Length: 78
Image 1 (spheres, rainbow, N blue to C red):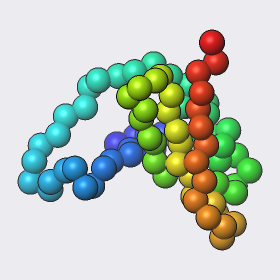
Image 2 (image 1 turned 90 degrees about the vertical axis):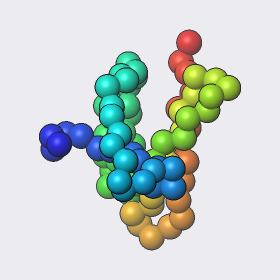
Image 3 (image 1 turned 30 degrees about the horizontal axis):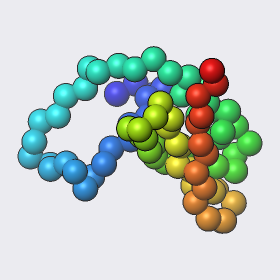
């Protein structure tokens, strides 16, 4: 896997002996948004929440300063 790739995987829904495939691509701005959130070194994106009732995604972050987990909402900019 390339160095510029980060995988978010749900271990509760998957099994180690099952082959899984990718290939369903969605155009978004996460390649810019994640580095923006992580640029100050205080937070690391560790997950993504998909809201199937909207077009919104939430980025779950870990606070690297020793604080609590944060959620960084990504609302559509229409």
